[in-house]
Each structure stands twice: as structure tokens, then as C-alpha cells.
Image (tube, rainbow, N blue to C red; front, side, top):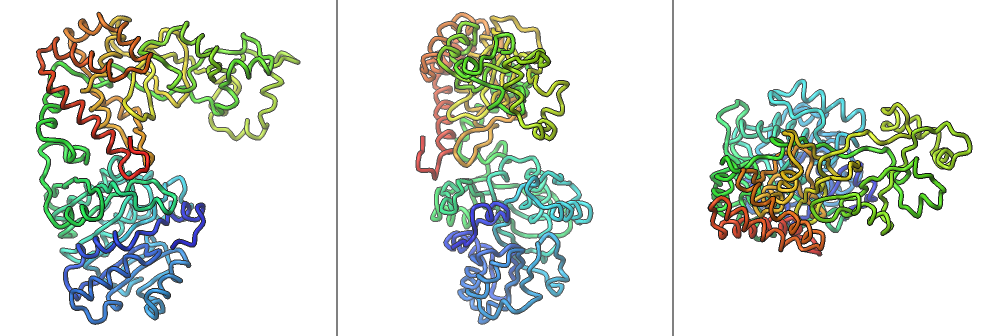
Length: 556
């Protein structure tokens, strides 16, 4: 239905909600024939249409008169006129204005029984200066911003915060939101505010990808909030669940789902059995395990400012006549790493295989007529001045920051994460995380830690703390990586140290499952844990991995 180009949709954050989805939410949100409904960003008018349907079913004779809305996009008013007719001419009910700049006075001081919709998905980075200023004003002036959501929040979060100022007592709200509501820090702060002003909240992840036809693989999440009160009170408990499709969603919105005993802030726990949740909680609290952040510092890799220019293959360096003195070994992609140990010999092998794993890093660019000077002279002069990374360096052409890690950790991953010990004293790009151990670990202990990282326990821990992208890959930001829990007890480290060569060989051959099975068995034998317990952890990690790809055509 959208008449916008892809670029326009991105700028507006406009992805129109299908009527079959909006109808489910309207049927939940609207309870009586006299209720007044506000859609803060009505776009394609899907929620307005389905609100009319619901009001009629409830016995309302003139549902159009109970609808209000705002939108910054003139095309939305074309949809409004086509679908709802003369309603579009009532200026104080449908306003061409950014909702975050409106007040109740714009709508004739009306208060609403229902606020419903699909707010724009626009990041702070892509907002206009005017929008940023409006968002900051909301943070300063809103009666509900006692716990700030932060100025880096996306536009949808400010819509949700601002909408509270338009609600009657006991009102309901229903939103279709992006997946960031499940993991972003600003989303957690926003939900904390909602918990103080509503009696109950439900967060439902939708596995059906409703916006694929608009070119977006984004996972959608429904937020339902009931029983509004403008005075803060005891925080409500949020129920998290997952709906496979519309039929499942209808059931979730009408039937109270079972509350999880642990970790209600993470929807993934709603997919797990209580036995696995209890086991994970027990192991995390035991003396047998530690989080990565307790034994290491995890930071992003070296930022070159231009990987295409600075990270080259051997063939490219030969074609450019670059000298060895102007090159350094580097890991450009995690896929270049084999096993759980990266040695100089392995690096020499990936160089020979033609991978981009040589870093252009001249000590001196002042040598006239040198090949490296001629090569880097092709970097646009204006780019040298405007590139923020270049500006931070003493010499823009020298990208190596000299921070050579103890290990490399995968950042964006299809399956499970892997830790590779660095014995080559080399750097990596920012597509890989760098791990610096903090407790003067021996080389033997480091290898054992890398093996322990492969256990079903740690693989499940990574799934729980990581963020799933729309494409299904798991992203581990440094903060999330630090929260991955691993077995580090003396018994486990000693037992694993005897098999690291075997584990390294299996992983190097791509036999990750076989390596994981051996690591699980060794850990269980060392600490007297039932192997069947680890089998349950393994099944759960696999299930969460599959969940990342739900709704996509290429489920793994």
C-alpha cells in the first residue's frame, strides 16, 4: 500500500501495519462503544480502520467521531481522506504535525481511553535537528520522565513516553514496536516508567515477519499496557511471551500467560522450561562459574577508519609493490580464525590462501617516491580531514593502536560464539572483539578458558545475553560479551587443559558439535554434574538459535 520509496520509509520510519495485525490489537484495546481513540502516527490508517470495525461491533453508531490522530507525512492524509472521507477535514482531530510536538490542546484538550499504533522507527542519528530538540524538550518537561530514557533513544521511545500525557485514568495502550524494545538500555528505562503507571504489561515477540513486504526483516514486538494511572505506584510485573503468528497472538493478548519465576526482563526465558531456568540460575550463582567481565576486559577491535584501504590481501599488496616494512599481520574477519588458538603458522597460511589479513601501517610516510606513499596519496584529501577516526590519530595513515589482545571473540555470529587465543601478537579490526585477561593467566589456563567457552552452558548464556538482528544473526556488544558465563573452577580448568589440543583440532576442522560434546562431558565429570542436564542446556541453546531465524525463509 505504501507509496514511499525505501529511502522515504527509512527517513519517516514508516512501515504500515497490516490490518489483520492492527485488528487484533484494536479488539484488545477498545472495550466500550463510547471510548475515544488516538493514533499518534496514523500513516496508512490501518489502526483507524480497524478501530472503526471494533467500535461498530461494540455498538457504536458513529465511530468516526471518536477517532483522533497526528502525522507529519502529507501522504497519510491522502490515505485518511480515501478511507474515512470527511473525517479528514476536522482540523482539531487530525493534525499534520509531529506527535512529539503536540499537546492535548491541539486535540481540543481531549483525553483518550486508548492510544494505539505503530510509531516511527527512526534512530537518534537519523532524526532532524528539530526532532532532536523536541525529544530533549520532552525529557525536560514530561511529568513521566522522572527516570530518563536518555537522549540516544529512538523516536518510537519518545512517542511512547509522550503518549502518557494524553491518557485518561484506566486507559489502555497498544503498540507495535521494533526488536530494540527487548534489549536496548533506553527501552528498559522506558518500560520501568510504564511499569509505574500501568496495572499490567505484556510484551509479545512476533515470529511472523509482518513487514517483509516493505523490505524490512525487522522483528516486531507488541506492547500492551492496561490500567493507566498518572500517579506512580508499585511497579507492575511484565509478562513476556512469543507468538508464532496471528492466531497465536490472539491467544496471547486475551489469555494471561504464565509468569516466569526468574529474569522477567528477558523474553527468551519465556521460551525455556522452568527446569532449565532453575539450572542456569543455580550454575550462574555457584562458585563454579564466572562472567567474562570478571576475568577479562572485552573491547572492540582496532578502528582503521577505512578497512578497504588499510586491510589488504597479499596479492593486493604485491600488485601495489608495497614493502614488508609497511605491512603488519592483522585479523580482518573472524572467519579467518581456525581452532581455539591463532598461531603465526596459521596466520601465514591464511595469508597464502588470499585472505585480507595484512594491515597497511607505514612507520614513515615521508620517504619520497615510495610505493606506500603513492598508494595512500590516493585517499581523498577532504576525507583525511573529515574522517573522525583519522582525526583522532597522531598520524592518520598509521591505524595500528598497539593493543594486541590475549584473545579474539566473535561479534556477529550465525551459530554460537567462539573465543580464540592470540599467540601471534597481532591486532584485529573492529568486526571482532578483543579480549584482555585480567588475572595474569598462564597460556595453559587461557586455552582451557577458550575450550570452556564452547560448553552448552556458555553457548546458552551467550544466546540469552546477545541481541538478535532482523536477519537472524546474534550480535554480542562488549557489554553483552562480558555477561557471558563460563565454567572457570580449578577442577574444570585442569581437566580441560589436558584436551585443548584435541578441541583445537576439532574446531579447526569445523566439528564444533563434536568439540562441544567433549567439553560438556569433561566439565560434568570434573564437577559431578549430570550430563543429561547439559543435554537440556544444549537443546535450549539450539532452540533459541532457531528462534532467531523464525519467520525468515532460511530458518537454520
